[in-house]
Amino acid sequence: MKAIIPFKKEGAKSRLGDFLNEKEREELAIRMLRDVLVALSESEIEEVEIISTCSSGGEMIEELKSDLKLKLTVREDERGLNEVLNEVIKEENEPVLIIMADIPLAMSESINELIEHEEDVVIAPGRKGGTNALFLRRPSDFSVSYYGISCSEHIETAKRRNLSLAVYDSFFISVDIDEVEDFIELLIHGKGFSAEYLREIGVFLRVDKNSKMQAEVDR
Amino acid sequence: MKAIIPFKKEGAKSRLGDFLNEKEREELAIRMLRDVLVALSESEIEEVEIISTCSSGGEMIEELKSDLKLKLTVREDERGLNEVLNEVIKEENEPVLIIMADIPLAMSESINELIEHEEDVVIAPGRKGGTNALFLRRPSDFSVSYYGISCSEHIETAKRRNLSLAVYDSFFISVDIDEVEDFIELLIHGKGFSAEYLREIGVFLRVDKNSKMQAEVDR
Image 1 (spheres, one colour):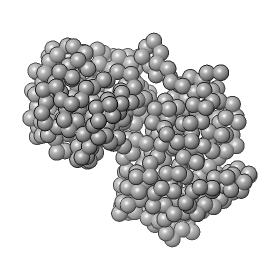
Image 2 (cartoon, chains in turn red, orange):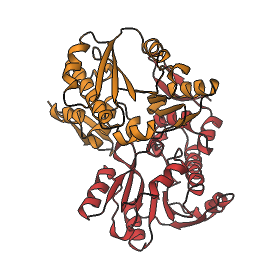
Image 3 (spheres, chains in turn yellow, red):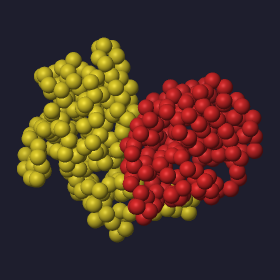
Image 4 (cartoon, one colour):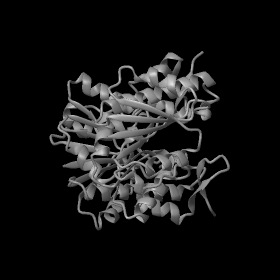
C-alpha cells in the first residue's frame, strides 16, 4: 500500500519562530518527516510519495532514502495542498494513506491498525479539528479539504458520498508539532530523530511555579 | 471489573475561571463525569467507585445512578489524590481501572481495548504528561503518583517493580478538559452531556483572522 506525505521545508513551522530560528525549524521539519518515514517503513506501507513544495526535494530524498525499507519518490508541486492532493487521488486506483509530516510520535502499530479497517474512509483526528491521517480505500471517490475543521469536513464528505467511515482513535497520531507547547509531548514521549534534535539544541521541560509545564530553550 | 474515578466538584476546573462562573464550572464537571460514566456503563466495566472530595457526594450519586447499568458507589475523602488512591489500591485484589472524570470523549470501545490488555499495567496518556486512564492488573503491587509528569512516573514505577507495561494510544482518552482551548475538541467531537452543556450556555467555535480556532462564549 502507498502513503502520501505532504511536506513543506522552506518557511516550515513559522509558529515556532519566536523559539527556533529558520534553519532550526527546517531541520526539525526534516527530522519529523524522518520519524514518520521510519514508522511507515516498519508498517505494512510499502511505498511513499512525498509531495514537496520545496525545490531541493530531490537531494533531500536521496538523504532520507538510506536505511529505509520503502520505495520513496518525491513530487514537487508548489500549488496549494488541496489542489495537489485532489489531483493525485483522482488518478489513484489503489487504497492510499495520506499522512502528515509533523506527527513524529506516530507508531507503526497504529498505522497498521488504521489501514486494516474495512471502511472506505478512515480518519485519525489531530488536535483542533485537524486530519492527521486519512485512509482512502477508493481515493478517486473522495475529495480532500485540509483547511478549517478538516476532520469534520472529511466526515461530511464521506457521508455525502455514501462512503463507509471510521474514526481512528490515536493520541500519538493526534500530536502534530505546530507550537512550542507541542514540544512537551515530543520531549516526554519522543524516542526518534526529532526528539533527539530538540534535546541537541537545548530544548528542555520545566515546571513553573504554578505547576504548569513549559518547554524552554537553553542557550 | 471495577473502575475508580477521582472527582472534585467544589472549586473544580479553576483554570476555566475567566470563561465560566463557578456554578457553570461545577455543572460542567458533573456533566463530564456523566459522559465518562455512560462510556463505562457501555463497556465491560461493571462497577464504579467515585472518590469524591465533595461533601454532597451522596445526593449527586443518586442523581447519576439513574439510567446507568453500573454498580455505583461513592467514597468521600478529602485527602490528596495520591494518598487516597494508594490506600484504596493497597486493599484491592482484583484488577482495577483508574480513570479521570474530565475526559468526556472517552469511548467504551477504547475502554474495552485498554482493559483487555494482558500486561500488568496499562497507561493511557493525557496531554502534557498526564495519565488519563491507568489499568492495574494487580493494584496492590503498584503505587500511583499523579502529580508532575505522571505518565513517565507510572512507566518508571512499573519498570522498577518488574511489572509488564503497555501504553494505550487513544486520542479521545488523552483530551482532558482543563482550559478554554480544550473546549475546541469537546465542541468538534463531543456528542454527550458536556458538549451539549457548552452549547446550551453559548460556547461556540470561531476561526479568527489568523485562521486560528478559538472557543468563545456568547452572552
